[in-house]
Image 1 (cartoon, rainbow, N blue to C red):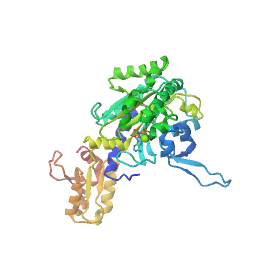
Image 2: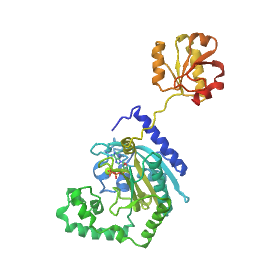
Image 3: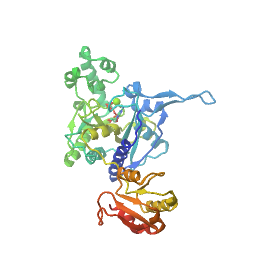
Image 4: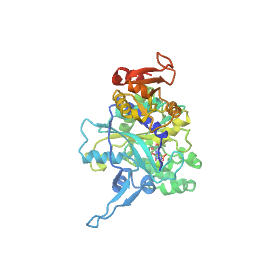
Length: 424
Ligand code: ATP
Ligand code: MG
Protein backbone atom coordinates (compact mmCIF):
# COMPACT_ATOMS: atom_id res chain seq x y z
CA UNK A 1 0.00 0.00 0.00
CA UNK A 2 1.58 3.21 -1.14
CA UNK A 3 1.76 6.78 0.01
CA UNK A 4 1.31 9.18 -2.88
CA UNK A 5 3.27 12.35 -2.22
CA UNK A 6 3.98 15.50 -4.22
CA UNK A 7 5.11 15.88 -6.94
CA UNK A 8 3.78 12.39 -7.82
CA UNK A 9 0.33 13.37 -6.51
CA UNK A 10 0.16 16.11 -9.18
CA UNK A 11 0.35 13.40 -11.85
CA UNK A 12 -2.61 11.70 -10.20
CA UNK A 13 -4.65 14.89 -10.20
CA UNK A 14 -3.76 15.48 -13.83
CA UNK A 15 -4.84 11.95 -14.74
CA UNK A 16 -8.11 12.21 -12.82
CA UNK A 17 -8.98 15.58 -14.35
CA UNK A 18 -8.33 14.27 -17.87
CA UNK A 19 -10.53 11.28 -17.19
CA UNK A 20 -13.37 13.33 -15.67
CA UNK A 21 -13.45 15.54 -18.75
CA UNK A 22 -13.99 12.50 -20.96
CA UNK A 23 -16.60 10.95 -18.64
CA UNK A 24 -18.58 14.17 -18.66
CA UNK A 25 -18.75 14.21 -22.44
CA UNK A 26 -20.57 10.88 -22.33
CA UNK A 27 -23.01 11.91 -19.59
CA UNK A 28 -21.61 9.68 -16.84
CA UNK A 29 -22.08 10.94 -13.28
CA UNK A 30 -20.12 10.23 -10.13
CA UNK A 31 -21.00 7.60 -7.51
CA UNK A 32 -19.19 6.97 -4.20
CA UNK A 33 -19.79 3.94 -2.03
CA UNK A 34 -18.14 2.67 1.19
CA UNK A 35 -14.75 0.99 1.15
CA UNK A 36 -16.02 -1.66 3.58
CA UNK A 37 -18.93 -3.93 2.63
CA UNK A 38 -20.30 -7.23 3.95
CA UNK A 39 -17.98 -10.02 2.78
CA UNK A 40 -20.99 -11.91 1.44
CA UNK A 41 -21.62 -9.18 -1.13
CA UNK A 42 -18.31 -9.91 -2.85
CA UNK A 43 -18.62 -13.68 -2.49
CA UNK A 44 -22.04 -13.57 -4.17
CA UNK A 45 -21.10 -10.89 -6.66
CA UNK A 46 -17.63 -11.83 -7.82
CA UNK A 47 -17.97 -15.59 -7.33
CA UNK A 48 -16.73 -18.09 -4.77
CA UNK A 49 -14.09 -19.77 -6.91
CA UNK A 50 -12.40 -16.65 -8.25
CA UNK A 51 -8.86 -15.66 -7.25
CA UNK A 52 -10.18 -12.49 -5.67
CA UNK A 53 -12.55 -14.24 -3.28
CA UNK A 54 -10.44 -17.35 -2.71
CA UNK A 55 -7.14 -15.68 -1.93
CA UNK A 56 -7.04 -11.92 -2.34
CA UNK A 57 -9.71 -10.42 -0.14
CA UNK A 58 -9.02 -8.53 3.06
CA UNK A 59 -11.91 -10.01 5.00
CA UNK A 60 -12.33 -9.87 8.76
CA UNK A 61 -14.82 -10.36 11.52
CA UNK A 62 -15.98 -7.14 13.12
CA UNK A 63 -16.38 -6.81 16.89
CA UNK A 64 -19.47 -8.39 18.32
CA UNK A 65 -22.43 -6.13 19.02
CA UNK A 66 -24.38 -6.31 22.27
CA UNK A 67 -26.19 -9.45 21.08
CA UNK A 68 -22.88 -11.19 20.47
CA UNK A 69 -23.33 -10.95 16.69
CA UNK A 70 -20.25 -10.08 14.64
CA UNK A 71 -20.45 -9.00 11.03
CA UNK A 72 -18.15 -10.40 8.35
CA UNK A 73 -16.71 -7.44 6.50
CA UNK A 74 -14.26 -6.95 3.66
CA UNK A 75 -12.31 -4.11 2.11
CA UNK A 76 -13.71 -3.80 -1.38
CA UNK A 77 -11.55 -5.64 -3.96
CA UNK A 78 -13.54 -4.03 -6.79
CA UNK A 79 -16.38 -1.59 -7.11
CA UNK A 80 -19.11 -3.14 -9.26
CA UNK A 81 -20.71 -5.21 -6.50
CA UNK A 82 -20.83 -2.17 -4.19
CA UNK A 83 -22.34 0.08 -6.85
CA UNK A 84 -25.01 -2.49 -7.66
CA UNK A 85 -25.77 -2.96 -3.94
CA UNK A 86 -26.16 0.81 -3.52
CA UNK A 87 -28.44 1.08 -6.56
CA UNK A 88 -30.70 -1.67 -5.20
CA UNK A 89 -30.66 -0.36 -1.63
CA UNK A 90 -31.74 3.14 -2.69
CA UNK A 91 -34.12 1.98 -5.46
CA UNK A 92 -31.95 4.03 -7.76
CA UNK A 93 -32.30 1.92 -10.86
CA UNK A 94 -34.82 3.27 -13.33
CA UNK A 95 -36.31 2.37 -16.68
CA UNK A 96 -34.22 4.87 -18.58
CA UNK A 97 -30.99 3.54 -17.08
CA UNK A 98 -28.12 5.06 -15.12
CA UNK A 99 -24.67 5.94 -16.33
CA UNK A 100 -22.18 6.13 -13.45
CA UNK A 101 -18.46 6.48 -12.86
CA UNK A 102 -16.23 6.17 -9.81
CA UNK A 103 -12.68 6.70 -8.67
CA UNK A 104 -11.28 5.04 -5.58
CA UNK A 105 -9.01 2.63 -3.77
CA UNK A 106 -9.49 -1.15 -4.03
CA UNK A 107 -7.77 -3.79 -1.91
CA UNK A 108 -6.38 -7.19 -2.81
CA UNK A 109 -3.87 -9.25 -0.87
CA UNK A 110 -1.60 -10.01 -3.82
CA UNK A 111 2.13 -10.43 -4.11
CA UNK A 112 3.28 -6.82 -4.42
CA UNK A 113 5.34 -6.01 -7.51
CA UNK A 114 5.56 -3.31 -10.14
CA UNK A 115 2.00 -2.58 -11.26
CA UNK A 116 0.47 -4.83 -8.61
CA UNK A 117 -0.26 -3.48 -5.16
CA UNK A 118 -2.41 -4.33 -2.15
CA UNK A 119 -4.14 -1.00 -2.21
CA UNK A 120 -4.55 0.23 -5.76
CA UNK A 121 -6.89 2.65 -7.47
CA UNK A 122 -9.43 2.27 -10.18
CA UNK A 123 -11.47 4.55 -12.31
CA UNK A 124 -14.47 2.71 -13.59
CA UNK A 125 -17.85 3.09 -15.23
CA UNK A 126 -21.11 1.19 -14.77
CA UNK A 127 -23.97 1.61 -17.23
CA UNK A 128 -27.02 0.05 -15.59
CA UNK A 129 -30.29 -0.79 -17.29
CA UNK A 130 -29.09 -0.94 -20.91
CA UNK A 131 -29.41 -4.20 -22.81
CA UNK A 132 -28.28 -3.37 -26.32
CA UNK A 133 -24.85 -3.55 -27.95
CA UNK A 134 -24.91 0.25 -28.34
CA UNK A 135 -23.94 0.79 -24.71
CA UNK A 136 -21.28 -1.95 -24.80
CA UNK A 137 -19.83 -0.07 -27.74
CA UNK A 138 -20.26 3.27 -25.95
CA UNK A 139 -18.18 2.23 -22.94
CA UNK A 140 -15.53 0.76 -25.25
CA UNK A 141 -15.41 3.98 -27.31
CA UNK A 142 -15.13 5.93 -24.08
CA UNK A 143 -12.29 3.73 -22.83
CA UNK A 144 -10.56 4.11 -26.16
CA UNK A 145 -10.92 7.90 -25.99
CA UNK A 146 -9.61 7.99 -22.41
CA UNK A 147 -6.45 6.18 -23.46
CA UNK A 148 -6.04 8.28 -26.60
CA UNK A 149 -6.53 11.63 -24.87
CA UNK A 150 -3.95 10.62 -22.27
CA UNK A 151 -1.44 10.21 -25.07
CA UNK A 152 -1.50 6.43 -25.56
CA UNK A 153 -1.40 5.28 -29.14
CA UNK A 154 -3.57 2.34 -30.14
CA UNK A 155 -1.53 -0.51 -31.58
CA UNK A 156 1.69 0.96 -30.26
CA UNK A 157 1.16 1.35 -26.50
CA UNK A 158 -2.15 -0.39 -25.93
CA UNK A 159 -4.41 -2.76 -27.80
CA UNK A 160 -7.98 -3.87 -27.32
CA UNK A 161 -9.00 -7.51 -26.93
CA UNK A 162 -12.60 -8.52 -27.29
CA UNK A 163 -14.59 -11.67 -26.66
CA UNK A 164 -18.17 -12.81 -26.23
CA UNK A 165 -18.97 -15.10 -23.29
CA UNK A 166 -22.54 -15.78 -24.41
CA UNK A 167 -25.19 -16.80 -21.91
CA UNK A 168 -25.08 -19.41 -19.16
CA UNK A 169 -26.59 -22.27 -21.20
CA UNK A 170 -23.98 -21.70 -23.90
CA UNK A 171 -21.19 -21.52 -21.35
CA UNK A 172 -22.47 -24.74 -19.77
CA UNK A 173 -22.37 -26.63 -23.06
CA UNK A 174 -18.89 -25.30 -23.75
CA UNK A 175 -17.81 -26.09 -20.22
CA UNK A 176 -18.66 -29.78 -20.64
CA UNK A 177 -16.67 -29.96 -23.85
CA UNK A 178 -13.82 -28.05 -22.24
CA UNK A 179 -13.64 -30.25 -19.15
CA UNK A 180 -13.57 -33.34 -21.36
CA UNK A 181 -10.71 -31.77 -23.34
CA UNK A 182 -8.78 -30.69 -20.25
CA UNK A 183 -9.17 -34.15 -18.72
CA UNK A 184 -7.35 -35.52 -21.76
CA UNK A 185 -4.49 -33.12 -21.04
CA UNK A 186 -4.41 -33.41 -17.25
CA UNK A 187 -0.75 -34.35 -17.22
CA UNK A 188 0.12 -30.99 -18.83
CA UNK A 189 -1.78 -28.84 -16.33
CA UNK A 190 -0.01 -26.91 -13.59
CA UNK A 191 -1.30 -26.80 -10.00
CA UNK A 192 -3.61 -23.86 -10.70
CA UNK A 193 -4.95 -25.61 -13.78
CA UNK A 194 -5.68 -28.86 -11.96
CA UNK A 195 -7.35 -26.97 -9.13
CA UNK A 196 -9.61 -25.11 -11.56
CA UNK A 197 -10.35 -27.99 -13.93
CA UNK A 198 -13.80 -28.60 -12.46
CA UNK A 199 -14.42 -25.34 -10.62
CA UNK A 200 -13.49 -22.76 -13.24
CA UNK A 201 -12.21 -24.46 -16.41
CA UNK A 202 -12.48 -21.28 -18.50
CA UNK A 203 -9.87 -19.73 -16.24
CA UNK A 204 -7.51 -22.60 -17.07
CA UNK A 205 -7.40 -21.25 -20.62
CA UNK A 206 -6.64 -17.77 -19.30
CA UNK A 207 -3.27 -19.11 -18.06
CA UNK A 208 -0.12 -17.13 -18.57
CA UNK A 209 2.02 -20.27 -18.26
CA UNK A 210 3.95 -20.51 -21.58
CA UNK A 211 4.02 -24.31 -21.39
CA UNK A 212 0.23 -24.42 -21.59
CA UNK A 213 -0.27 -22.10 -24.57
CA UNK A 214 -0.49 -24.78 -27.29
CA UNK A 215 -2.90 -26.83 -25.25
CA UNK A 216 -5.02 -23.74 -24.48
CA UNK A 217 -5.01 -22.63 -28.11
CA UNK A 218 -6.35 -25.95 -29.31
CA UNK A 219 -9.11 -26.17 -26.68
CA UNK A 220 -12.79 -25.98 -27.66
CA UNK A 221 -13.75 -22.33 -28.08
CA UNK A 222 -16.74 -20.74 -26.45
CA UNK A 223 -17.40 -18.71 -29.61
CA UNK A 224 -18.31 -21.95 -31.41
CA UNK A 225 -21.01 -22.63 -28.81
CA UNK A 226 -22.80 -19.32 -29.12
CA UNK A 227 -26.40 -19.19 -30.35
CA UNK A 228 -27.97 -16.67 -32.70
CA UNK A 229 -28.91 -14.07 -30.07
CA UNK A 230 -25.46 -13.92 -28.51
CA UNK A 231 -23.80 -13.74 -31.90
CA UNK A 232 -26.14 -10.95 -32.98
CA UNK A 233 -25.18 -8.98 -29.87
CA UNK A 234 -21.50 -9.57 -30.48
CA UNK A 235 -21.81 -8.55 -34.12
CA UNK A 236 -23.76 -5.47 -33.08
CA UNK A 237 -20.88 -4.34 -30.88
CA UNK A 238 -18.35 -5.13 -33.57
CA UNK A 239 -20.25 -3.23 -36.26
CA UNK A 240 -20.14 -0.04 -34.16
CA UNK A 241 -16.46 -0.44 -33.30
CA UNK A 242 -15.64 -1.10 -36.95
CA UNK A 243 -17.58 1.98 -38.06
CA UNK A 244 -15.84 4.10 -35.41
CA UNK A 245 -12.44 2.79 -36.47
CA UNK A 246 -11.63 1.23 -33.09
CA UNK A 247 -9.23 -1.64 -33.71
CA UNK A 248 -9.61 -4.84 -31.68
CA UNK A 249 -8.43 -8.40 -31.67
CA UNK A 250 -10.93 -11.14 -30.94
CA UNK A 251 -9.38 -13.22 -28.19
CA UNK A 252 -11.54 -16.34 -27.74
CA UNK A 253 -9.68 -17.13 -24.49
CA UNK A 254 -10.39 -13.85 -22.80
CA UNK A 255 -12.60 -14.64 -19.79
CA UNK A 256 -11.80 -12.09 -17.04
CA UNK A 257 -11.31 -13.06 -13.42
CA UNK A 258 -14.79 -12.29 -12.13
CA UNK A 259 -17.77 -14.60 -12.48
CA UNK A 260 -20.49 -12.07 -13.20
CA UNK A 261 -19.72 -11.44 -16.86
CA UNK A 262 -21.81 -12.53 -19.84
CA UNK A 263 -21.79 -11.61 -23.55
CA UNK A 264 -19.21 -8.87 -24.23
CA UNK A 265 -15.90 -8.86 -22.35
CA UNK A 266 -12.87 -6.75 -23.22
CA UNK A 267 -9.43 -5.72 -22.01
CA UNK A 268 -6.88 -3.15 -23.00
CA UNK A 269 -3.45 -4.68 -22.73
CA UNK A 270 0.07 -3.38 -23.06
CA UNK A 271 3.39 -5.14 -23.51
CA UNK A 272 5.22 -2.34 -21.70
CA UNK A 273 4.49 -3.40 -18.11
CA UNK A 274 5.73 -6.99 -18.02
CA UNK A 275 3.17 -9.45 -16.75
CA UNK A 276 0.99 -6.63 -15.31
CA UNK A 277 -0.21 -6.03 -18.85
CA UNK A 278 -3.92 -5.33 -18.37
CA UNK A 279 -4.64 -1.64 -17.87
CA UNK A 280 -8.39 -1.81 -18.28
CA UNK A 281 -10.93 -4.61 -18.20
CA UNK A 282 -14.67 -4.86 -18.37
CA UNK A 283 -17.75 -6.33 -19.89
CA UNK A 284 -21.44 -7.00 -19.59
CA UNK A 285 -22.96 -8.39 -16.38
CA UNK A 286 -26.66 -8.80 -17.06
CA UNK A 287 -27.28 -11.24 -14.20
CA UNK A 288 -25.59 -9.42 -11.32
CA UNK A 289 -28.34 -7.00 -10.33
CA UNK A 290 -30.87 -9.80 -9.95
CA UNK A 291 -28.30 -12.01 -8.25
CA UNK A 292 -27.74 -9.33 -5.61
CA UNK A 293 -31.48 -9.01 -4.95
CA UNK A 294 -32.58 -6.34 -7.41
CA UNK A 295 -35.23 -6.38 -10.11
CA UNK A 296 -33.51 -7.99 -13.11
CA UNK A 297 -31.73 -5.40 -15.25
CA UNK A 298 -28.84 -5.59 -17.70
CA UNK A 299 -25.56 -3.74 -17.17
CA UNK A 300 -22.11 -3.18 -18.61
CA UNK A 301 -18.95 -1.50 -17.29
CA UNK A 302 -15.19 -1.47 -16.94
CA UNK A 303 -12.44 -0.75 -14.44
CA UNK A 304 -9.15 0.93 -15.22
CA UNK A 305 -6.08 0.58 -12.98
CA UNK A 306 -4.70 4.06 -12.28
CA UNK A 307 -1.25 2.93 -11.06
CA UNK A 308 -0.75 0.95 -14.25
CA UNK A 309 -1.94 3.87 -16.35
CA UNK A 310 0.59 6.17 -14.67
CA UNK A 311 3.38 3.60 -15.01
CA UNK A 312 2.58 3.17 -18.67
CA UNK A 313 2.47 6.93 -19.29
CA UNK A 314 5.83 7.29 -17.55
CA UNK A 315 7.23 4.40 -19.59
CA UNK A 316 6.35 6.14 -22.87
CA UNK A 317 7.45 9.57 -21.65
CA UNK A 318 4.11 11.31 -21.19
CA UNK A 319 4.94 13.65 -18.30
CA UNK A 320 2.28 16.14 -17.30
CA UNK A 321 3.71 19.47 -16.20
CA UNK A 322 3.20 20.24 -12.53
CA UNK A 323 0.93 23.25 -12.13
CA UNK A 324 2.84 26.46 -11.36
CA UNK A 325 1.54 29.54 -9.54
CA UNK A 326 0.86 32.79 -11.35
CA UNK A 327 2.76 34.84 -8.79
CA UNK A 328 5.04 34.66 -5.78
CA UNK A 329 4.84 37.33 -3.05
CA UNK A 330 8.14 38.65 -1.73
CA UNK A 331 7.77 40.47 1.58
CA UNK A 332 10.93 42.20 2.83
CA UNK A 333 9.38 43.58 6.02
CA UNK A 334 7.00 41.96 8.49
CA UNK A 335 5.46 45.36 9.07
CA UNK A 336 3.67 45.29 5.70
CA UNK A 337 2.20 41.83 6.29
CA UNK A 338 -1.41 42.79 7.08
CA UNK A 339 -1.67 44.92 3.93
CA UNK A 340 0.19 42.33 1.85
CA UNK A 341 -2.04 39.50 2.90
CA UNK A 342 -5.21 41.49 2.28
CA UNK A 343 -3.88 42.17 -1.23
CA UNK A 344 -3.11 38.50 -1.80
CA UNK A 345 -6.67 37.62 -0.76
CA UNK A 346 -7.99 40.11 -3.33
CA UNK A 347 -5.78 38.51 -5.99
CA UNK A 348 -7.10 35.06 -5.11
CA UNK A 349 -10.66 36.36 -5.32
CA UNK A 350 -9.78 37.41 -8.86
CA UNK A 351 -8.56 33.87 -9.61
CA UNK A 352 -4.81 34.40 -9.30
CA UNK A 353 -2.71 31.59 -7.80
CA UNK A 354 -0.24 33.40 -5.59
CA UNK A 355 2.18 31.97 -3.04
CA UNK A 356 3.19 33.92 0.03
CA UNK A 357 6.84 33.73 1.03
CA UNK A 358 6.44 32.50 4.59
CA UNK A 359 8.44 33.99 7.48
CA UNK A 360 11.31 36.41 7.17
CA UNK A 361 14.38 35.91 5.02
CA UNK A 362 16.80 37.85 2.85
CA UNK A 363 15.63 39.29 -0.48
CA UNK A 364 18.12 37.02 -2.23
CA UNK A 365 16.67 33.89 -0.73
CA UNK A 366 13.10 35.09 -1.37
CA UNK A 367 13.91 35.68 -5.05
CA UNK A 368 15.46 32.22 -5.24
CA UNK A 369 12.26 30.70 -3.85
CA UNK A 370 10.18 32.76 -6.28
CA UNK A 371 12.19 31.40 -9.18
CA UNK A 372 12.04 27.82 -7.95
CA UNK A 373 8.26 28.03 -7.55
CA UNK A 374 7.89 28.37 -11.32
CA UNK A 375 5.76 31.51 -10.83
CA UNK A 376 5.39 33.85 -13.79
CA UNK A 377 5.70 36.99 -11.65
CA UNK A 378 7.31 38.06 -8.41
CA UNK A 379 5.27 40.58 -6.46
CA UNK A 380 7.68 42.66 -4.41
CA UNK A 381 5.98 44.29 -1.46
CA UNK A 382 8.82 46.69 -0.54
CA UNK A 383 8.19 48.84 2.53
CA UNK A 384 8.26 52.13 0.55
CA UNK A 385 6.02 50.83 -2.22
CA UNK A 386 3.47 49.50 0.25
CA UNK A 387 3.49 52.82 2.12
CA UNK A 388 2.53 54.46 -1.21
CA UNK A 389 -0.17 51.86 -1.87
CA UNK A 390 1.92 50.14 -4.55
CA UNK A 391 3.49 46.78 -5.31
CA UNK A 392 6.36 46.14 -7.72
CA UNK A 393 5.57 43.42 -10.28
CA UNK A 394 8.54 41.65 -11.83
CA UNK A 395 8.10 39.23 -14.75
CA UNK A 396 10.27 36.18 -14.02
CA UNK A 397 10.02 34.54 -17.42
CA UNK A 398 10.83 37.51 -19.63
CA UNK A 399 7.16 37.74 -20.60
CA UNK A 400 4.75 40.66 -20.93
CA UNK A 401 4.65 43.85 -22.98
CA UNK A 402 7.16 45.48 -20.68
CA UNK A 403 9.65 42.64 -21.17
CA UNK A 404 11.57 41.66 -18.08
CA UNK A 405 11.29 45.18 -16.67
CA UNK A 406 9.66 45.71 -13.31
CA UNK A 407 6.53 47.87 -13.08
CA UNK A 408 4.28 49.13 -10.31
CA UNK A 409 0.62 48.40 -9.67
CA UNK A 410 -1.87 49.75 -7.16
CA UNK A 411 -2.73 47.69 -4.06
CA UNK A 412 -6.26 49.04 -3.97
CA UNK A 413 -7.11 48.22 -7.58
CA UNK A 414 -6.11 44.54 -7.84
CA UNK A 415 -9.09 43.75 -10.07
CA UNK A 416 -7.66 46.09 -12.72
CA UNK A 417 -4.44 44.15 -13.15
CA UNK A 418 -5.15 40.61 -11.93
CA UNK A 419 -5.83 39.57 -15.52
CA UNK A 420 -2.29 40.59 -16.45
CA UNK A 421 -0.94 37.94 -14.07
CA UNK A 422 -3.39 35.33 -15.30
CA UNK A 423 -2.52 35.84 -18.96
CA UNK A 424 1.22 35.48 -18.44
P1 ATP B 1 -4.72 -8.95 -13.37
O1 ATP B 1 -5.01 -9.94 -14.42
O2 ATP B 1 -3.59 -8.06 -13.69
O3 ATP B 1 -4.64 -9.54 -11.99
P2 ATP B 1 -7.50 -8.44 -12.91
O4 ATP B 1 -8.17 -9.17 -14.00
O5 ATP B 1 -7.43 -9.04 -11.55
O6 ATP B 1 -6.02 -7.98 -13.35
P3 ATP B 1 -9.63 -6.52 -12.65
O7 ATP B 1 -10.22 -7.13 -11.47
O8 ATP B 1 -10.32 -6.63 -13.93
O9 ATP B 1 -8.10 -6.98 -12.81
O10 ATP B 1 -9.34 -4.96 -12.36
C1 ATP B 1 -9.32 -3.98 -13.38
C2 ATP B 1 -7.98 -3.29 -13.47
O11 ATP B 1 -7.49 -2.92 -12.19
C3 ATP B 1 -6.87 -4.17 -14.01
O12 ATP B 1 -6.92 -4.18 -15.39
C4 ATP B 1 -5.64 -3.47 -13.51
O13 ATP B 1 -5.31 -2.37 -14.32
C5 ATP B 1 -6.07 -2.99 -12.17
N1 ATP B 1 -5.61 -3.89 -11.08
C6 ATP B 1 -6.14 -5.07 -10.69
N2 ATP B 1 -5.48 -5.57 -9.64
C7 ATP B 1 -4.48 -4.68 -9.35
C8 ATP B 1 -3.47 -4.61 -8.35
N3 ATP B 1 -3.33 -5.54 -7.42
N4 ATP B 1 -2.63 -3.55 -8.36
C9 ATP B 1 -2.76 -2.57 -9.29
N5 ATP B 1 -3.70 -2.57 -10.24
C10 ATP B 1 -4.58 -3.61 -10.27
MG1 MG C 1 -5.94 -10.09 -10.54
